Image (cartoon, rainbow, N blue to C red; front, top):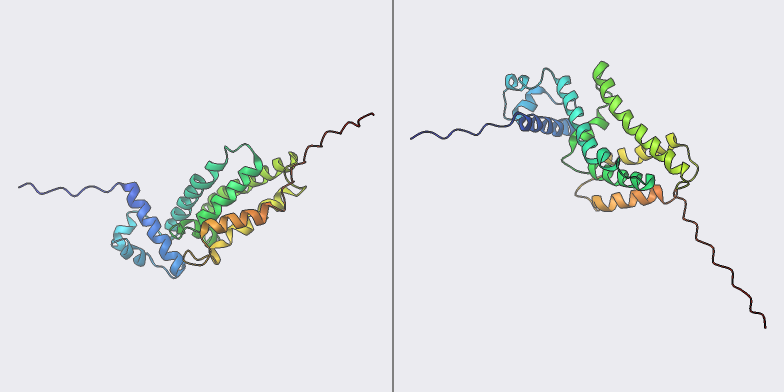
Length: 214
């Protein structure tokens, strides 16, 4: 009887599994408190086997952050960029961003926020360039909304970093098993930020009533 062949694992799936496992460990124990041996054991690999997938611990961190940026761009940025109305674009961006950072499984995105000072040199410059692209997108969208009279006269740069400050700090305090569901949080934060900025539409003037001449 011919033995059954073990199905081969797609290298992309294996890489994703390693990055997600490593991200969870680093979020739980910290970058300095997590060793390559810890990650290898959690992935069911030997330390030598893990070196087949990454050259070093810093290289693994770079890969996790790049993967996190890929997830962010796919689930947030690329989905809202086609929206023509700048205010709706920004509102949708906040909702999607909040929902992304509140996902307990999306630790790769959390690492981008929490370990941003760990990288050095060219690797840090590459990740920062991708972050700056998001900031420019927000600045441009805010500037467009102000120009169109949809938002109050605000500085687009201040608005962009205020947006980021509100959204990106969530991972520090939000608990998926807490009293506030992620959907409710996204809705509340959107209202809190935009309701005070948006210019209410001007109601059309009622037509003048003609006086009857007796």
